[in-house]
Image (tube, rainbow, N blue to C red; front, side, top):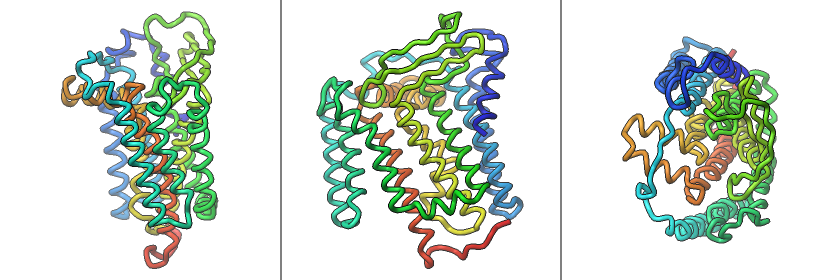
Length: 372
């Protein structure tokens, strides 16, 4: 499904450009993107209702959800690419930037202390959960603990160590169930497709991948390596512009780690729910909410999608309402951007562990019967 998404966007970009970014491209506007988002949501909702009413088999429903996700992602990418970039003055910030260190320390300390208490009371034999909470607290507190620490070893350790810790948790608590889920070809393909789709979505809305080149872009193939700050620290970032394709993409170790971790987690959640659909067994509320539509919605809440959220708010409620959202998500010094990114990683990890444990309890699961 992700290949279909990229091929569709490439086809659109190959049509002669009518005007600049923020107006119409190949006859398209931001409203076409908004329409596609709505259409995708309708397709997904209709598919889910069709499955619940037994009009569609679970496998047919999975294919329908896949189509709906592709349409929704195409709409979101088109909307973000074609909507005008809002410009806000510093006076529209919801609070002074001087308060950021205090907010970072306060939120990070609260999460760290809360993780210690919850881990001690609820999971005394699973300190790995406590460590994940501490990492979340340090990630949020990092800008205040290490001012201008864009090349500090602690920042790199947090970014690179988070997926290692998440992988250890899943290996320890969920590897058996995930192995069984991925053994089902349909569930495996659905999970891989959703994961790749979410990865492309992240890259597109955060500006690391686009087929809609800005005015003033180089007219010849350009390859460069520049230092770019992404999630706490600075990374050497490869940037490639292919104007004759057209295509721009950028990549760094930080982007691969963060986007890859989120994509894998969302894909695994999707595969788990796909398997549960095919087996007609209950998976628990969290798993059902993080796959399918929830995967894309959850992704949109992450800090890298702040511009998209702000543009939707501009369209729906006007610039005065959108300005605080834009600053909260986009400002690199804001601690809330890191909170949403790392919080999403924790949420998707927790949903997998919770789903595995719920499905493994006979009194909370239905009998396992193949659906088709």
